[in-house]
Length: 168
Image 1 (cartoon, rainbow, N blue to C red):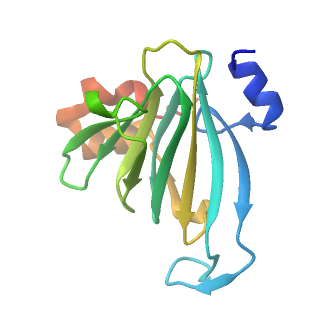
Image 2: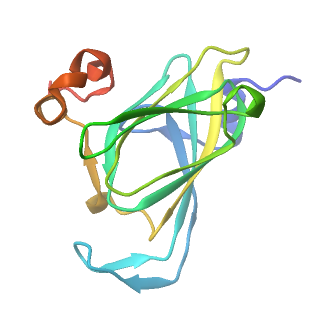
């Protein structure tokens, strides 16, 4: 039986992610460490599944205050757009076609803005995992609101505005 997005959502018990796509936390280390982050204490690490589908193809811009390692599992390739503090935009493609520039894993360093979207491919989904250390905490994430992104990166606006969060 070929995998489908609906099957993966049910099998992995994924929920809609507030920034787009689907997700499920699969691991939260019980160990806790002290950090200089708001609230100080963080779990040592966390891991999630993330699934992009044709009906939820985009994860809107966000900025984590921790490093995040992304691991491609299966499906169509997934583009990850990163923007650094100086406004340099880089596009990376997670996938298994290493000969054509895809990579099966990618580190997105703390402080970079990132957005993700499913690329054209044979499958109606893209499945990956993301591990964060210290562990994920919503206090360590900045949502990519359109006014913030536009003010910070006016030279990129026309190319990135579809990946921003708009207040309703």
